Amino acid sequence: MYQNFIKPICDWIIALIAFPFFCIIWICVAIAIKLEDGGPVFYMAERIGKNSKKLMMFKFRSMKVNAENITNPDGSSFNAKDDPRVTKVGKFLRETSLDETAQVLNMLKGEMSLVGPRASGWSALENYQPDEVDKMKVRPGITGYTQAYYRNSIGVRDKRLKDAWYANNISFMLDVKIFFKTIQTVLKHNNIYTN
Image (tube, rainbow, N blue to C red; front, side):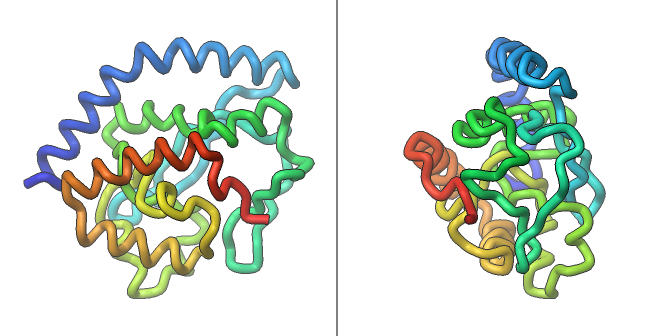
């Protein structure tokens, strides 16, 4: 009942209420991005959505235009404090997680939840192990269990397993705990970087 009916309705209502507030923030973010290098404001990321369908996820661009895609040995995105690909504005957006707020637009479209597993890159779909695929049973979230409690401190395999566990154990109280833990994690700037 919660997962299939209450949660989607709550997500849409939250996104609708949050939209005017975020519009004010987004205008400031967009101006800052444009002033720095004149490049596009948004980065449209190809991600794996619910039921393994392709999702075009909105993000505010934090890297230089046409930046090289670098991955770690485990397939995760390279993410270091001194990454030369990241713009000055982008560094601030990442450290405050403001780059992720654009995903409210995906929530309005019914493609994402406020809380859910982190959407993996589309190219990673073929690399999922059988015990990891349950992660895709639910809509991906702006925040989620692994982002709130681990952020970038654990590897891809552990993240997928924990997200699969979340997908099989969704509850209202779990979502509430994740939401408030996310606030704490963001404010403390915990585990932002992988390198």
